[in-house]
Image (cartoon, rainbow, N blue to C red; front, side):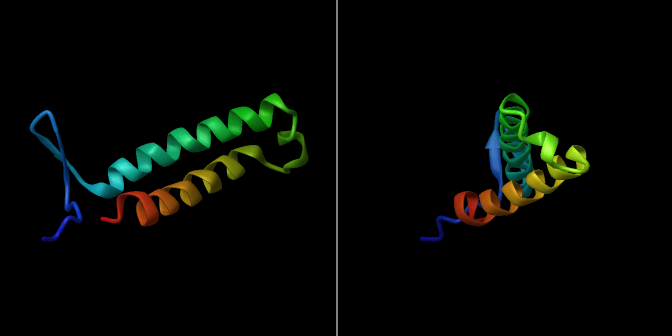
Amino acid sequence: MNTIPHEFAIGGVYFPPLLIAGILGTIAAFITAHLLKRYRLSNYFFYPPAVFLALIVIYTVLIGTFVIRG
């Protein structure tokens, strides 16, 4: 009855849901940062690496909350 995953099994190795959300959040932040650089919107930020870290945190929380729900 309980369909909420407590861990993900990939190849017999168990991974916590927060790790998967963190990896997906990092990938999404990398794509967003790449698009910001491509369209020269990153020039408007004072310190782009801090924006990249903030995007990682935001995407990880959103993916962990709404996609994985673990």
